[in-house]
Image (cartoon, rainbow, N blue to C red; front, top):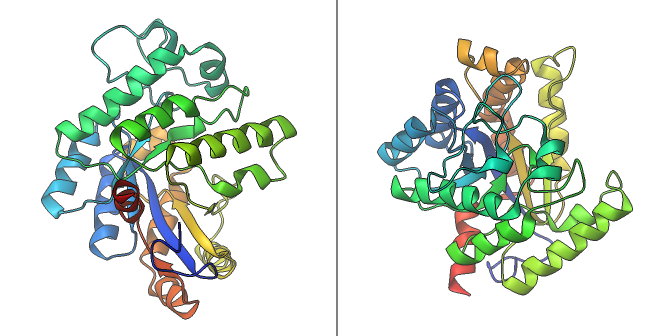
Length: 297
């Protein structure tokens, strides 16, 4: 794939990606600013979040087109979300109060695959109806990846990738990671093979900073960690995933890790990081580049 994009096998391509677009207004402000400063190349939006409508409106107003869908099928602990699908009640996905379950393991064990497919497509369709041409699909909290109870929903997600001609965030090196057990490694090998057979483009690797640490890492230390990640980027296509946000009262109620999100926002706008990428001769790309390649094949 990298050669089809005009690069060599030894080139290092990097997608700088902001997760959780739409989760709060402060997150929306941070991500739009980062796009305007050309400090990120990608983001993915959580359609069930109340502030996702603002995120989509800001994207259209600012001419931002590198937006994927952060498929959201579970609630955060202190932030319940409700399904987007309005055609039927998704009984297996919701609590008695009508919200997604917060326990990803419970979701994996109990979700009906057809209901998962319906909700994922409803989220894609909602974005399209608001003028968003999605660049890719990925998964909030890894809920379709089978990381918790061993039951994944990648094949239904791939069905939608095929229908809407979108790549998916499943790194090809996932099957090589030592922190996955043999069953998970075998599952990822099978899913990667399935994606390849379907013509769904995947990246090679995904990296991120340590997240939600106690105590919170100081800015200087976090900057050193990010510099090492950038320097150690491997040949191929890698996604650097961060959760940038401006701190708001709303963010404080959603996550105890709000300080890290604000630090990541500052880091992405730090000119030293951008200069390091240049010195390392790393080429920045976006999911839109991959989507357009997939649609041309």
